[in-house]
Image (cartoon, rainbow, N blue to C red; front, side, top):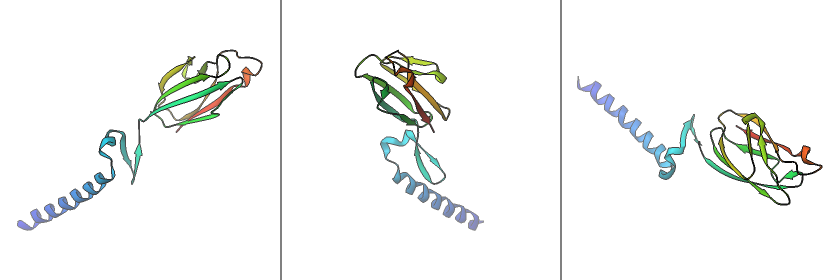
Length: 130
């Protein structure tokens, strides 16, 4: 009768040590934003603050990369004239700053939503959500 209890106790002790080894790899202040996938740590639900410099007929970032469920704040820095940003698939249009969260991985188009001159129609780029 004593033997099964001893084996269970040893098994539990091994599992406890394995868990404590993993917990050493996780910074304490970030434990709310991490989860395990197979054997690697993946950060989730991060906050991204992105500034787009907008000049006549272009933005400084041609493609934006975010992870699904990131909390994104997108700021428009108008260099020469007024530019607004639109993400048609999300039905978002704004002129200075907007916060959004996308949960579906996809490539979303973003474009200038305020006529800024002859090259306005060419101001179309991509937000890649992985």
